Length: 182
Image (cartoon, rainbow, N blue to C red; front, side, top):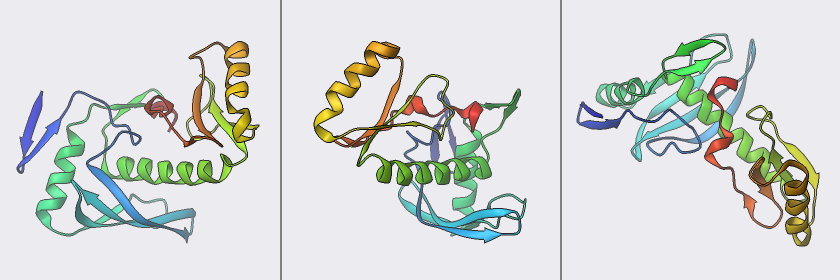
């Protein structure tokens, strides 16, 4: 089923996943220090068009969007409201701007960490690995196949996810994202 809102067609059949999200994106993400930890500021794009700037002041409040236009704000909120609810600690949450942008910022942090880590390690996740965490196995580029074979023997083929390695770089599959662990 699709819904047309403010001239934006929205697919409502799949859950929000920052690894596969193509319509909402962030650029120029900068960490900032707030009274309750670290927050961020970034530029938000919707369908490739500048949509505004988002701020998390790390003060315990929500993410704030300074939209480029009222229409853009309406389009983004309509798009996010069409996603099915996300399970979280026994509750079902609507995908809000706060959740979507927060998940995209977290994904950016994970990608940056994996980009540094994969140069000398195979990075992988087991089925019980929490999203955002992964295992480091020291590995050279010419040892990737042997290391993969060893993990297939130990855990079973298809029972773990390759996130990054020295030969192929960062290769995070969409299955790595677990909304209920976010």
